[in-house]
Amino acid sequence: MNDNIPIAHDMLRGADKIAGFLGMERRQIYHLAEKTHLPVFKIGATLCARKSTLLAWIVEQEQRGWASMPHAAV
Image 1 (cartoon, rainbow, N blue to C red):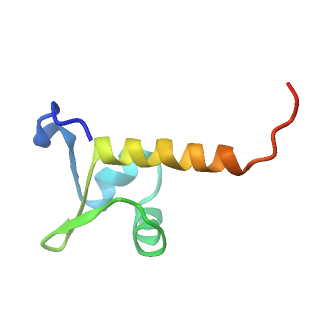
Image 2 (spheres, rainbow, N blue to C red):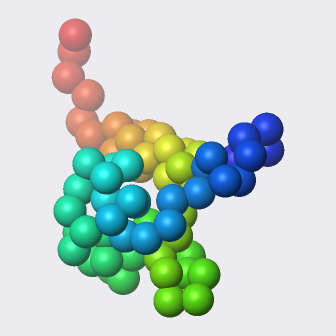
C-alpha cells in the first residue's frame, strides 16, 4: 500500500469502476469477489477497492503463477 496517495485518488467505488480499472466486466468482479481473494470491501452496499491494493494483488498473482510454471530454457 502506498500511504502517499490520497485516498480519494486511490479509491474505486462500485463494481463498474473496479471492472473498468481491471479491464473486466462488472459480473466478473462480483464473481471474483465471491470466489477468490480479490481485495475488495463494502462501504454500505457499495463494493469498493483501492487501486494500489489491486495492483499489489496483481503482482502477487503474477509471482505466484510464475513460480508454479515449469520454466523452459531460454
